[in-house]
Image (cartoon, rainbow, N blue to C red):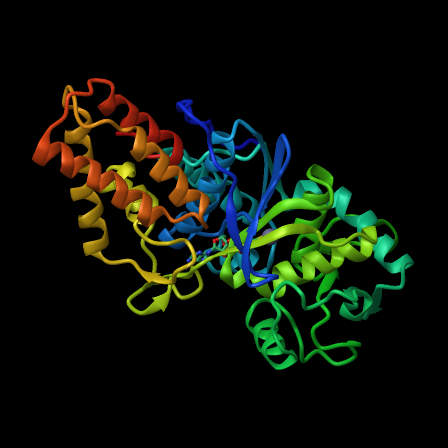
Length: 409
Ligand code: 5CA
Ligand code: ZN
């Protein structure tokens, strides 16, 4: 699948900083030392509806990861999937009486447009579940050979007990896992499973649903977790730096994915850090396609809202916080964008060297974007109240805000 065009990332004077970031698996900050090529996998959308502010906030967090690494002169090997076949997509296509392939293509195209407008840097590999199927089948077959998978009425399940490290991503107890499994695509109550938490690897073909040749597995379609594992292992290999997504993916998705990969390769861990963004709510409830309480990026764009203001609205919240989208959040971001644009269009100002370092330090410390915004606010205020004679400063600020925060002033 093709991704979307990259906006340019200006080079900055001085030295970028290594990223310290919160890892769900250890519950603390880890300093990542990726080597010359940093490797990151971020879970992509299930394309049955348009990009909402929750998605945008999550992708914004991982865009910052990429920008911090680029600032250290590393290359970034970023992989993202599109879950272009899954139950919710098929259900929505049926509800609306549209072709599921056409629905997925339309929403993926809109997602690309939204990401481009928001200046999110594209992944190097953007891979759909359907195109990954030929790589998924041998992995499921291999898990079966290893005794880590079993069949139930034609479906193939992964046995969580085959991974001694199972549970180490989310660190939840069995009761919490069971509850979340039922809520998030699992089937803990299905009779005949070895462990209620065992997730499906391959679903045998169902009447009226799309299916693919699964070799010795028979016709069917892949489970959700093995999709991301197949794509990540194919394009990044084991031991990559960051597995990313929203906090609703910690369990079961990232827990199961890590287990699949660890059993398949005999290596541990799959990722050096499991990084999770908080949930954005609307009217007190998590924004979600299934509930329909949504604010869409594309709708705001159609309403004439500057994408840079949308981006600033996201950046005003720490990526790990759960927060609420309101009209005020957007109004504050628009006002800030106006102040910043006015500031960088002046001929001079106070030196921006310290500001660049402050933005770097804020982002390198668990992506503290609100602290970075506050630093730019202070520079603009100083320019306003005391002026300054540095004619290079407005340009430096503009480039730093673009390179590190993805905001075009
Ligand atoms: N296709 C799978 C991942 S493989 C999926 O979860 N798709 S999704 O479209 O439901 O979500 C895409 C990303 O947006 C995920 O990382 C998810 O955690 C994140 N996300 C979904 N809703 C919100 C929300 N309200 N706030 C923040 N992030 C969200
Ligand atoms: Zn995923």
